[in-house]
Image (cartoon, rainbow, N blue to C red; front, side):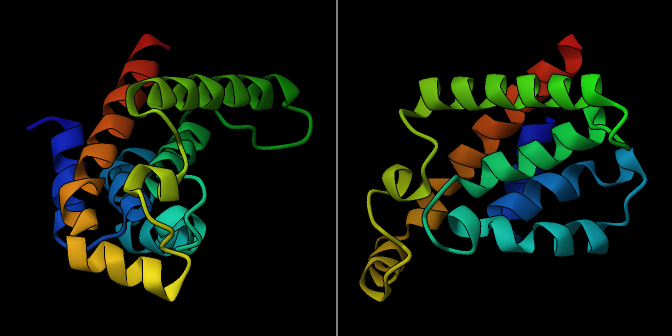
Length: 147
């Protein structure tokens, strides 16, 4: 099973979009899964269910930080490299899905009680979000494997 299918499965088993991605990579970066999930909790639903940047993307951003990120202010080159990778991921996700914004991806504003109920009623997190998780990880894998 591919990394994207495993992350998608994590999502369908109850983790949020961001958690499902970071949890998939936790062991690789010597993180315990519980800490990784806690770290990513607030990014689900487009930043705390505000409908902003897709949580699948923010989960992938966390992984890119673990792979390429700087450990100190002196590592400006690593910070710049991480930003470049995040921009690439974002651009490719946007090309594939038309946007990076959760409310636009879902077609409703989950930051409002009405929009959240609409998303639940239509089952959008079950029908649409697994595909966004898969897309984010497929692109992430491509970027990491190209190094």
